Image (tube, rainbow, N blue to C red; front, side):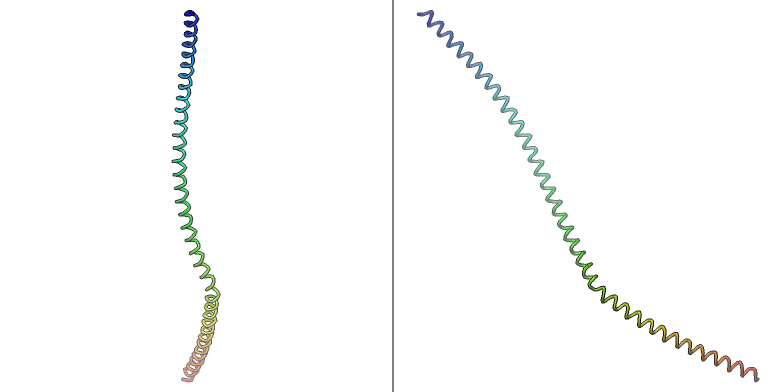
Length: 132
């Protein structure tokens, strides 16, 4: 019985050692897996930080684009206002041109009359000089 009990105890010890080895191996594997997961968590944290930085940059770019759009809308409104005034400006320009043309014709006619008077005076003076 003692031998049987001793063999039974040896078997139990061997089983316990085997279970302990398996437990150590499982613990080592779990430890490696935990290390891998910690590395993955750190990598993902880095990606999150980078993504957040990119989001901030995109928001800044969006704000800059919105300001540019507002500036362009203001410029466009100014151009639209100018376009609305163009017909009035063209009409005033045409009116001024017509008045200038009329004044130019009047002055030309005045200069032609003055020229005719000068010719007549020169002819009279020439005739008077011939008589003298």
